[in-house]
Image (cartoon, rainbow, N blue to C red; front, side):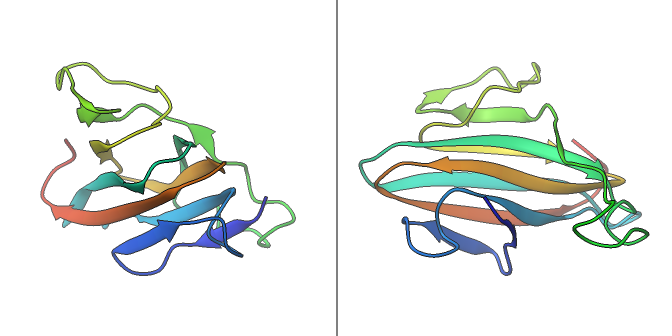
Length: 136
């Protein structure tokens, strides 16, 4: 499993090199402007994927030697809007694995956010949007 910088607003999980089982760093909040990340997972062709939302201190990757002494990403809760094909309870945080079509909000102030992906099959698009304003 590799640590992959997911550049841009969309990436596809399809089992090709760097598009399968990896930890995808999707970014961080910008203090004072962006406090939340919105992530949508869309299954384009049937298959199996499991995604766990993770975070670590935003400074962890910049003040250490990458790959040697940086602290690990740890699972963190998110706010589900639509989780694994069903409408979710927004007011309740979740740390459940994402295994199907989902839309979630990740409060991210002060954190670097990653998606830890276990890919088995199918084609899954992941869309990431930074939201301006206070954390959700």
